[in-house]
Every structure is written in C-alpha cells, then in structure tokens.
Image (tube, rainbow, N blue to C red; front, side, top):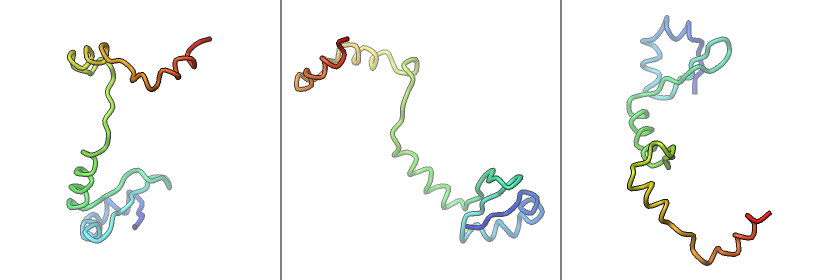
Length: 88
C-alpha cells in the first residue's frame, strides 16, 4: 500500500486515481493517516462485507415487538446455576 501526504495527493489526484486501481493509497496529514483512497471495486466489496457484521442497537432503537419479546423471555433452566453469581 502506498502512503502519500495530503498535499501531494491533492496536487496529483489523477496519478493516484490510476494507482488506486492496483492498490489502496493511504493519505496522511501531519504524518498521521487521515483516510484511504480505494477503488470502486474495493469499496463495493467492503460494503458487502460490512452487511454481514453483527449490528447492535440501543434499547430506544428497538421496535416495540422486540422489547415485548425480550421482556417475556426467560433464561434456559440449564443455566440456573449462574443465578448464585448474582447473590451478594
């Protein structure tokens, strides 16, 4: 992967637009990577992979039927021995 300062990247965008078809380009600002320039093909692959990642939600984001299902749920009795861990 190439690494290039932001000023170089902006001055020579056309050059890096061609390079990115072969490899990603890390763009730095004050010696820190501030972003990556990747091809459209790589971006599409990333977005497809991202769809498979588990998602988490805040309670306020859950639909009412999910909240009701959670409220009615019970722990499997096979795990009853864990209740003693909650006792003080």
